[in-house]
Length: 323
Ligand code: AKB
Image 1 (cartoon, helix red, strand yellow):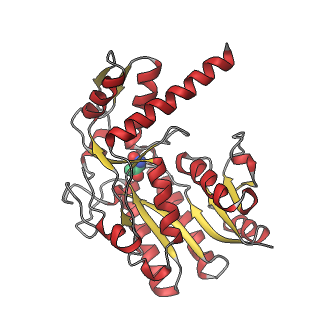
Image 2 (cartoon, rainbow, N blue to C red; image 1 turned 90 degrees about the horizontal axis):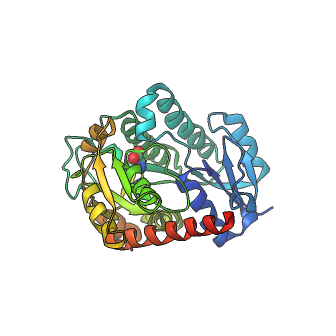
């Protein structure tokens, strides 16, 4: 039986797109999608789909054996905003899920692991602009603390047990295919939907809050390319900085107004403002460029143009279907 790839958390914002991209490359049957709930998503159902709670190590091991899985992408996690509402469970899911996968890799049940880190590993004492790969890291959110601890555990399992684990510090991810799931950067997806649906948006961050962001297509390319890079070229076994573009809500609104001149935005900052204020504004990703050739293809203008045109097409198709 040929070896397969398992995606844990396949119904999430990254999971759906990563499943589709990997199935395109490797074939539907060689990429096993899994999530804690059943799905009706027709793309996920193009290939095998398993119900899996990553906290249940025995079931995880059974699925790995059943499908001869050699490579795992572990995407199941609580993101920053949701994690602040449920810190105990966020810590449990984000850490124990990782341990379950790392332990199976240590036992040689799988040979390669991808685990997502985040810009949330940084904190208010980190240099905000062009944040370096190695710098002060004092995160103030439960999500950031879990990501920083997770990075150190990944590096430890690599150093001590030879586990081939690879990781990226994702910025805010912007895509049109799937909804974001409880992050502080989610506004930068919602704004496009609201601009097209109603022409106005109430933003939960202040107008001048600059954050690092990335088009989903770039993020999927980065994820697959770090996993395909030769093991010896991966020098950072915690997590790599990767940069796309950086912008504020008011800059995004101005660019949207070029296509929708009547678009209006108002600001009603909530608890997510202090999370955003603790994160970098822009990222230095030279280590990823030097070690495995990472380069972003989307600046803010291209990201906005893509989001407006793709969401516009989707809405038009929905209207036609219902007409
Ligand atoms: C979040 O906002 O929590 C995520 C992230 C930056 O990791 N998008």
